[in-house]
Length: 494
Image (cartoon, rainbow, N blue to C red; front, side, top):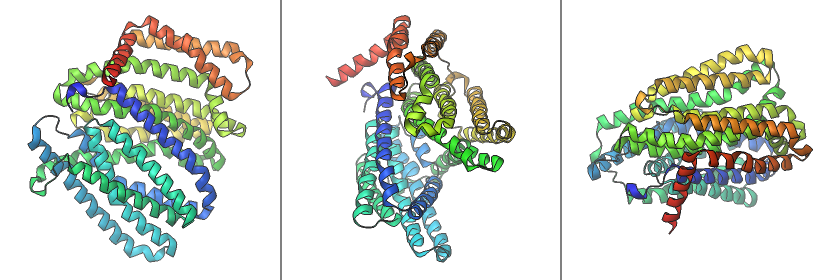
């Protein structure tokens, strides 16, 4: 793929966002069915081994998915590509397979302690690890090549194939967690085989090209990213453990989890999709054109994202509680403030994450791990102080503090030639229009409408003439960026 035909950040973002929506729909389809087909015990076994599977896959990948993206040879030709395939893809996968064999040996030593059915599921789970790692590696190669179309097909295809297979086997063959795991294993093996053929046709992977120094360099970059993933998970979920420990109430944990869980959908639709879209473009531009090109792209992206951020925050403040009550029911009103504030947190994380992105371009994964660990410890410290005083909202405030410190630290440690902030005019205009829309919504009470769905619809429709249109009229750069994107899309389609 030549540089002239590469999609831009906006196209990648739309693809990843659509993929995330399709994955979410699969979850909405499967959850009510699976909870009825499996009893509580079987569902508990399924969830228990899923947690172990996530942990094992995360460790066995050795951070390879991050290394595959960052070390992709955008320059250097066929020889560089051959070294990349051998040292960054093949060798780490062999190491991951060895780790999996060691895990199997360890499991064999203790399997007699588990109930017979759970023991069998444990073996199936361990067999799932190598194909799952391989699928992740191949998806990362597509990611590095900026093939978001392929990447989204892998993610969505795997999720829906698993959904259909699990439902068919659990309903018609084996109504147990073992049936669900057998279905997942079949899908994973089939997908891994197909992706191996796809990758073999485009990437040389020969053992004779393996160089221990290059493999070691990849591991030095990737291993801290494993720790970063674990620390990020603790940053997001340690609050729940501490809420129960400090309040002694599972009800408080439930209030927090419901609001936080719905806010994670915002994270998936905006933050995750935007990060994927921007990162794969920035790596290629950094390697081929240098930091100045990355900053130009960053500023163009920030000039649009600042409006998305302000608009979403306005919507969350005005009708966020309505969205929570619509999705979770009227008896979950205590979770509304959690959803609104954690939603705002994740929206800001998307904006500030772009501002301070740059450490990984310089392969400083150890610094990223240190910053995330620091934010996690800050979160724990503030939870200890705020939860006894403010209960559930104390955990929310601690999350805000921890993420704020992380944003500042990432920006300060970002190399100077890669820092960027949103345009001042765009920031002021977006903030002003957002405040205006919130004030109008509060003043009119959205015309006294009682329906949560209609309140959301009215707010969304009113923001078109009161937020989107003024932004387009008053910001020439925003108009230019959007019209240029639409013109390129039109030219590509024709």
